[in-house]
Length: 342
Image (cartoon, rainbow, N blue to C red; front, side):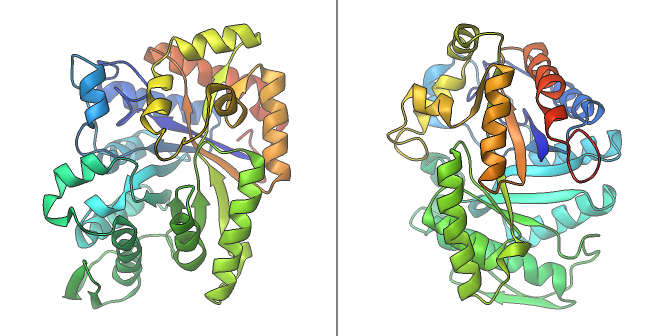
């Protein structure tokens, strides 16, 4: 099993208080993650603050652009993989994005995994791209993935979609990796379809083993229908991590954090119908023994990778202490094929 850490690029105000981190704090989390043996470090993506953040906090959060931040992390690390967990693809121009990601893959000697999705907050998308307010974000995401493939694989690249179009673009250098892995983020039908038809992995968030199994079956069906081998598509999961010595300590730690604000912000979308107890069950929240049992259940469900995991804490030091606890008590029980703890 592989384990990753989400660096707090754009999580202040969502999972953490404001203010929360400086740019150097973000880099510190990534460097320490590599030293602890984690497999990947992620960066999530927001170009503007959402309304629920503006309503909840008196000060705006610092959102650090993930690709630029991961480039700095690449210069400070040597083996940890660099993941976008996740990049909101409908807000990104594909020609510029292809250049940025290929450059990052070159600078990091082939360590990039690009997690992409439609994004969880419609108000942010409409504020950033008002001319596309009536567009299908699912279609934009699919066209974005198709565009990236063309730009990375062909010398002279052209694409004509409903929303994304470019002609005779020569974009070099190409990524080091061929193909550079793209993971489809999300828990809904469109995410399954994009993973099966277009991507190298499926990256849902905050769901339990049973939903991993059922979602993976849909990904496989879409892959076969597209003439692809499902075994070439990885299954990853973004989970919330909160460890403590007792159940009571864990619950108190979670409830005094800002994470419950984030959970509630998605109650009409990703966490619809999920109460707090169900949320705890579907994430790596509990005592070390309880979390190890959960990891085992996910492994039996076919999960390959806990990607860009979100560690609970109200300060950077608390976040890093949770990373240490997980690395000390959970990771050694699940050695990876690479021969490391992660």
